[in-house]
Image 1 (cartoon, rainbow, N blue to C red):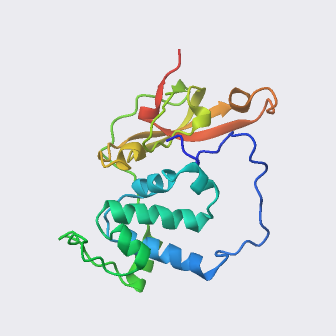
Image 2: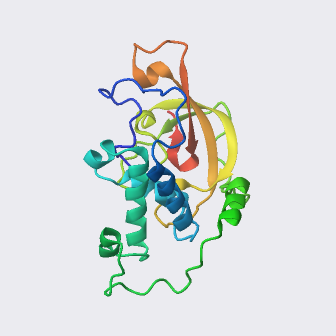
Image 3: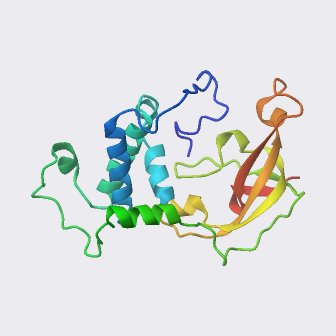
Length: 224
């Protein structure tokens, strides 16, 4: 979506501040925010892409004035309300809401700390063997569809409508754009697409620079 999170190529935000010896957390509450997000996520009510979209959907003034873990917490609140795990009153007061509907009957308890650590260490792949066959091959020239959607998309604004070259076929993966909306995984080919920097940023870019973006089959169309 064209949200505040898609800042690539946007002017007026200044350089990226790089913090030397950056700690994992700047305050104790940030560690708790991450732990709560992971614990509730283990209930399996939403995909990682839906979680991303919940954060992207924050109003731009809120998004741009919130810290990293404030954004995570606000996104989690959206997901909790959407999936009936707590009401707005419960989130605001920290107390049970007598008017709250019953929790989903198939809700499973989150794993304990050791089991959760093992799951996180093992990871989970979005690669799918039954993905739709790729339409493009290495060397093909492709144009990124000019997608404007309020839903989630992994095609960043700065490459939409631009022409690039397929330089690598990653294989079949869950399509995040549909996974985020509950429309199913729709697994399909994911490619590395190379763009000339000047095609994205204009004549001020170095002529030998390029940008690689990972894009899915449904993001692309043949370049004329």
